[in-house]
Length: 518
Image 1 (cartoon, rainbow, N blue to C red):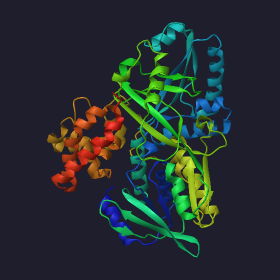
Image 2: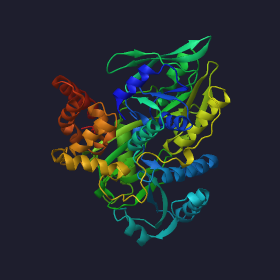
Image 3: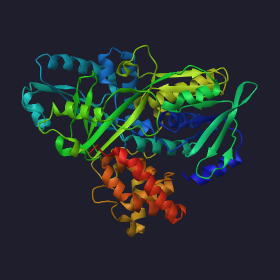
Image 4: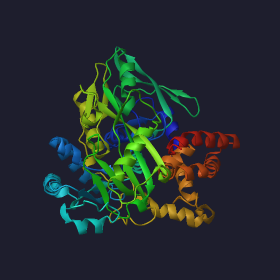
């Protein structure tokens, strides 16, 4: 997957069956769906793949226990089915994760036990394992760092866990393998129209400044939290569709949980569930849900959110994490379809599809778990609108790039799947690449070389935030590793020393927002 080859193709091919604007979970899913149906497909991403919301999730592939509690049975059923399909299609990335739900009140055991049995039943043959009631002793044996005072027992259940940015890159590779053209750092400036109907897009390669005008009568708006911008470019003055919500996560040392079992807190002070999930040998705690007025490429966690997470998780752990224990803090924005109320936690996580009079197909809302179904629905909507010829969807059984059965999730670099052997071969041929990027990070120089050559990694932030997860695992270590990463990328792409300096400065400025307030 080389960006220069994609640009050459963009220059050579003027017309496309469909153009996708946005390279997050939804856009990448549409690219895989459309290309695998045989359509000539072009995807354009203004920044990097999964730069926004799609790399800032709670890393769960789940049906949504909270949605079941809200009575949204249809959404839970759909998500559980998609969870099972994703586990089958990307077995190197999606693993079974057991969760314990601790009970401190007499009624919680039977209440949540029954609810989770319904959750099991709804998953059917695609379930990951049965839920089980636990005694107090069994609960503490499973999660020894739980606060024992007042603990009555627990319920253990199963959901899926994954690496969101790694799945995004693998979806991009899957789309390319089926003939799609995908380009990051290509910004769509405006829609092109002919007789009030969409005829293509005007774009700028932000790395070179070159402009292009690819043509298509079928354009998908998959820009997530920025969806209203393209909708209003299509139809000025059009009412906004989205209510934006910010979710913040903390990353601390795994010793605060001392277990491979995750924890679910069923209800926080704002009515949300709270997760504490082992991830890449750290502990991920989240999330919040606060309304925000404007979309941002780099949402910044608030002190109130950080305090909320520390306070609520501290009620359940025998050793409470504090500000100084935070290794990284990151926020993502949710594109929720607007409702009448002001509480974003209560807005639906369903996806929404709109086809404008000009032919712009906007798809927004939803979540990572249902990305495949969202893509299928979007392409089917284009077929119904006669923007694409009819062709069946095949993605329910389509392996994702890197798919490797019987993955050992304890092995180093397991998330590379079938690419892992080639990555290690690169290291054998060039042993000088095997040095560690940083003593506190689990990555070697090899991963950066691989990302530059095979995964369209163009910037230091691409490398440390999404091709590796260094920025999310330890922000200070990522800042310290930035000069080495910049040097590798400059060498791979032929950039001058001045580029390295600018990149390190830019990354450091961004990464400071991932540090806890002092």
